[in-house]
Image (cartoon, rainbow, N blue to C red; front, side, top):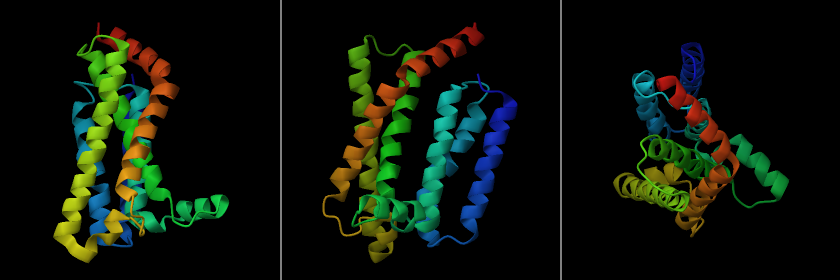
Length: 206
């Protein structure tokens, strides 16, 4: 179980990063749209840290995901410096940072859903668990694409920075594919580690 000191340290780091990003973002509307999930999720985590604490692994990955979102909001996804470095390294024709964001959109939420389903004993059988987890990730990704579509309709040309398609016709499909890839990678890499931490968390509740 994560300690209060560790939680406060992570919260302080996140708050400092948010302040830095809010100082002079590339586009204020884009910044608000991109960091809104962070502004929504972190207060919920703060409020639930005593009644429903998460595993240290999950808190750490959520913090990392928040950093990816904040960085994307600061520069806009098509202008994040890390993406330009990746363009040079891999000889790409577009800034790929948005795909990192969508990879994380599958990588972290799948473990959030996994922890909730396992701790609540809502699903019986590993195969059904894996299937439902991937379905949840794809549902989240599709919902986000619908939100982007709504933003494009509401904001018109002002939504270009938020969408970050960079002229790629198959951007929506690629976004969902990267979210699915992130979910699969998270399950392959972290399931055993996650299981151990869930067991440790359960033992502290007894």
